[in-house]
Image 1 (tube, rainbow, N blue to C red):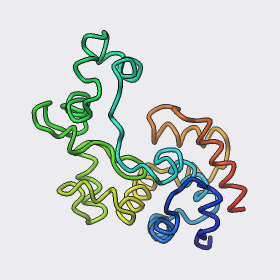
Image 2: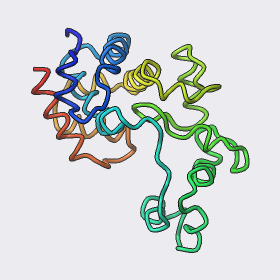
Image 3: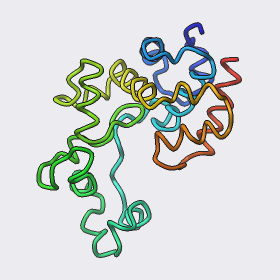
Length: 207
């Protein structure tokens, strides 16, 4: 497959604020990690469009109301009293919900906040940052904010994609395969309708 063009990227993600900043980074990353057919590229770009708000949002937003915390993490926030302690406090929230998991230390370690979601497919947790650092030969574990810049963000997303076997799943080009990809990225099917809409557009643009 030839590189995606600036006009194609704009057509797939019309609300991307800086498409010219992203097109070369995406093409380099896609080539490196074998996202090299229109089917693979369409699925990849569709998922990125949803995950990153069309390449505009590269850091996890943890600024939740108490009501929203109870919806997102009902087991962790079983009552309004508990949720109110973390309302509108992103750093405290990250250190709580990501404590002692994903390779992070306990709540007092600060790992939850340091290793919160970043990049185009949001890398989360110390162990995932360390794995990415090793695979990409980039010190994202020591300097997590590297994932808010275009080349590392694109490369880490493409590495995640290939390492989870998503190229081969995308080759099937079926609705069921796209749902499987969504689950491997998201852990569920949140935002599936929007992801599917981006996928439909991307397939048309890249065909």
